[in-house]
Length: 198
Image (cartoon, rainbow, N blue to C red; front, top):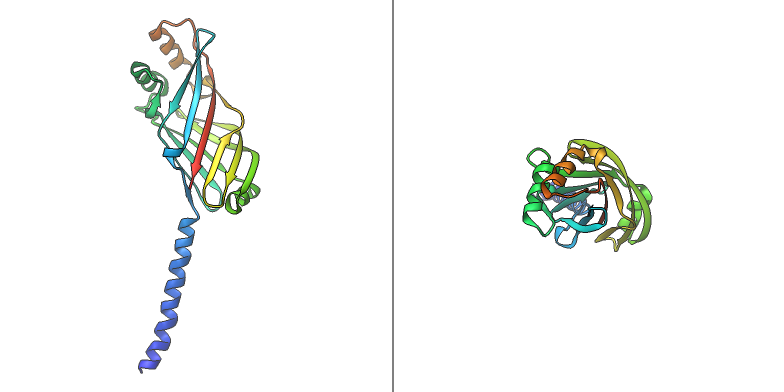
């Protein structure tokens, strides 16, 4: 009886261990964005020739084993080095009470995913969908990917141009211009990022 029980229990135990290991490997195959090592900034131009660099300091994101990539920007984390300007951007431009997050989502190609998993360097263009201020628009990002199979660095090789009109931000920019007493504020901004996923 004992031998019969052992014959039944051992295979079941091995099966449980094997399934547990497979589930663990599946979980480990997903990459999470490391906010402490990542950065995203854009350049704002006012009065024609005065340019300043603004930062979004809180980023979230994940890359699944199947290549689904999602990056979230917490717009409340805008930093411009001037507190009152940060508040105005949150209230009058981003309207973070309604639209706290901006989200970029895309499905990576098999070639791109292979480099990420196996390690290597790849210069590529990634097309994604940007959900920002309640509107969605397709965007194209030219990036360099560097991977050792565990950690991935994704950096823009040239800025991504975001137009205010595409996301209904024109009125907010005009309000900011009035509050600051400026002659003009640019309606297009170049965005750059360095993202680390582990």
